[in-house]
Amino acid sequence: NPEANYDRNSALCMVQMMDCGQGQLYLYEKMRMFHLVVQHFMDRRDNRGVIRKAIKYGTKDPNLWVNVLTYFASQDKVPEQELQEVLLHIEKEALLQPMLIIQILAKNHKLPISIIRPYLTRRLEADSRAIQQHHEQIKKSQKETNDMLKQIEQL
Image: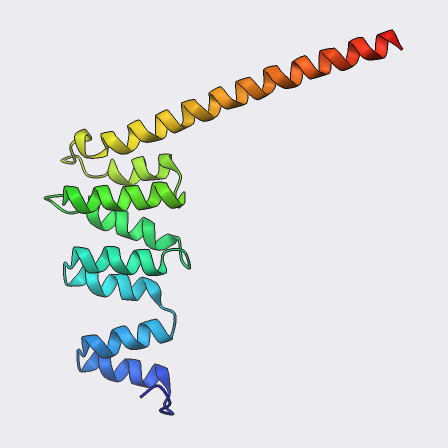
């Protein structure tokens, strides 16, 4: 009952002692303990639940994505599809720096490069496009500056 009057910390202790998963999730969410919500699904090896909750709460707590990435990278048999989905979401929302992602994934020596190759390729292509745009902007600015200098000299 959302209108019930109770101490959330006491209720949380109670549902944890009784191992009431639904009650724990409810209270974790009410208490904004999003890392524990995600951890709940990690403990149960529910990969879809981990991703679903990370997407839901990841903008409120970006460190969730570090935990999620570490969780997937630490598995003996890395779930390729889920890891690709996590990387795609991290990339789309620009949640983590590429170097941090590589450092986390590099901890699993069994992780084949083929799993992260699409992410790396997309990042390198995007960075190359950004560099090209910056070069074009620099050339344009230099031309405008030179034109202004010529106008100043003529005055």
